[in-house]
Image 1 (cartoon, rainbow, N blue to C red):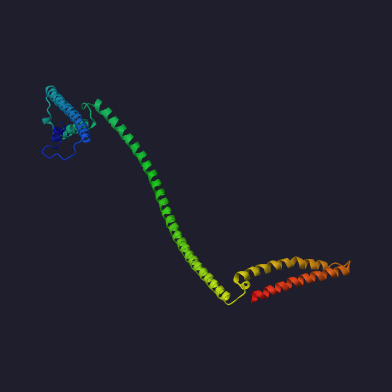
Image 2 (image 1 turned 30 degrees about the vertical axis):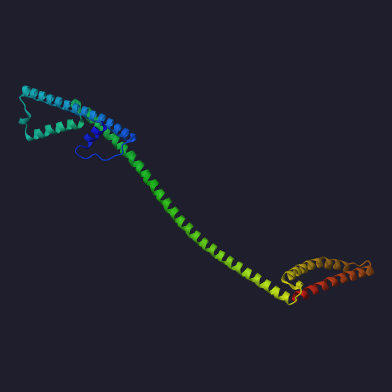
Length: 269
């Protein structure tokens, strides 16, 4: 059945190769059934049109015979102007799809056509409004797209600049790390050389840093002692006791200053 349908469809042309399986067989069977139903409907429409054509021809012949019998009139006897008018009347009836050329048939057909025209105009106006709205939306969308593209370019430029800054900072950081490691290696080598020459360990870099911190701490400790000494200098009721306290404070201050001087001298070495 499918092979016969394909032969009918392609006629003298060769049937294209296709894979034969249940799926393709089902599809071709479905197509053949739809084609058969469509051919049947087309044949029915053709038969109906042929029947109407025969009816119209019979009606036209009847009207022509009736016209000839009543007024002895034939379309062949019309002038060229009359023939044009008659053809225009027939064409109008065909265009308006009226059953005849009477005024009772033309008026409703013209009214329907006018209503269709108004509906079409109204639909066109609605379409124009929709198109105008779409054009405005499209314009706004294009403007927004342009702004977004510009913002994107600015963002890419800013990102490129920031990336260059980051790369520069990374290079500087690598350079500083390398220099720091170089300095550490130099300090270690120098300390090893000084140690080999018998340098006191207390004069090493770390020791000097610790002494500097200790010196700062001692300086902070002397501040309240100086304030305490100044308070004793302001005391008047017992001069002898005050003198003793002053001497004690002076000795303590001298001791701290001597220690500070010693530490400073060691740092200078």
